[in-house]
Amino acid sequence: MKLVIAGIVQDRPYFEKYVEPHLGSDVNYIGSVGPEERDKVLGNAYALLHPIYFSEPFGLSIVEAMACGTPVLAFNRGSMPEIIQDGLNGFIVASVEEMADQVKNVANISREICRQTVEQRFTQEIMVKAYIDVYKEILK
Image 1: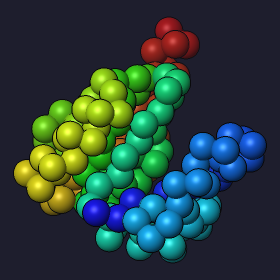
Image 2: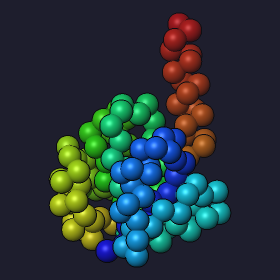
Image 3: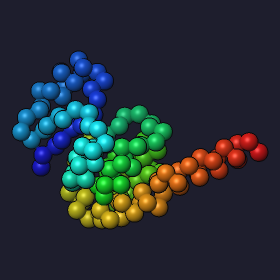
Image 4: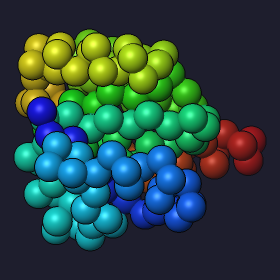
């Protein structure tokens, strides 16, 4: 299976030393992609692998992938357990090895359910209402 890596290189020396040597016909780095290309890349992807090593407060790329119907595999860090329903729209994993092992189970994830997750929980209207509700609660 081909691996496509997208995104901004924030640490050029690290990328050149640890990533670039592995690029080739099966591993392709396409750089940062804009909205139109991103939708195409994510929509045609088998899955989004999100191996973050920090506690991300919200995973916009996770929601963007699911909006395209693409299942997500991510480490159990930060907001990932709040966004990904393990086994329903993706998988929460503890290691790179577990992530690689779970790729075979992506076929059991409904792309329609991934899209429905976003429609039910992360539309602009839903998110704005949730933020306003939080602000109102804080102001009480």
